[in-house]
Image 1 (cartoon, rainbow, N blue to C red):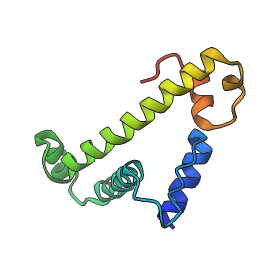
Image 2: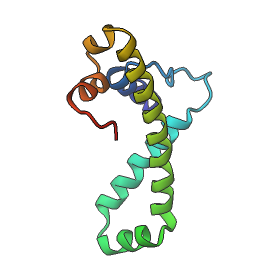
Image 3: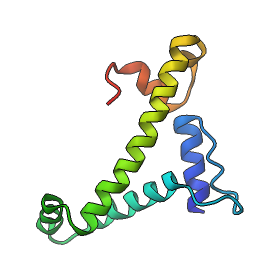
Image 4: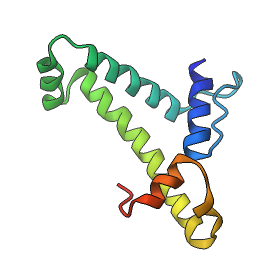
Amino acid sequence: MIRFSFDIICKFSFEIDTECFIPSFPESNLADSFDLTSKLLVQRAMSLLPLIWKLKRLQNIGSEKKLKEAIGVVDNVVMVMIGQRRREMATTMTGLNKSNLLSRFMGSIEDDN
């Protein structure tokens, strides 16, 4: 179910088909990183003592180190997608008319970061 949900999110947000819901396809590094990020952020939000995760983040250890690495993977993949979409929008006018979230966000901001 998680793979299917991730595939649907990517289809509507980025207009890419990850085909994560097909059991015969290998695990997606992006999907795994996205899932790990979600889990770690929920754990952080449920933490009774926010000071603990803040200290872990400051020292870059444990779950905060894993979170930083997983976010890095997601960021890298998304930045590649943004670069591809920028090139597509520069060469054709069809990129401007896309209805996915990525194109809409890119149309409303100047800075890709």
